[in-house]
Image 1 (cartoon, rainbow, N blue to C red):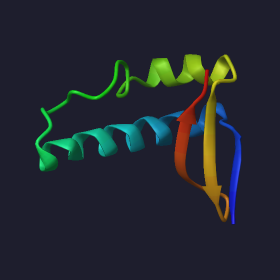
Image 2: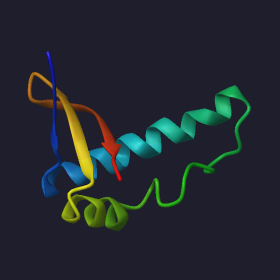
Image 3: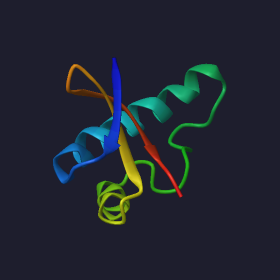
Length: 71
């Protein structure tokens, strides 16, 4: 079962790394290297989104498996 909740500060580093990993694989399907959305690889940006209650974590068995920034 998946649970969606506001991300914690401690989860921001995990989410930032997940974002880097996700967008770095775009090159495998014809994308340009390191061309994800603005700030996709920035821990400070993810921390700002968390502080503004915009960053959400998807968890399975209490492990972060995904995230979303909602406006």
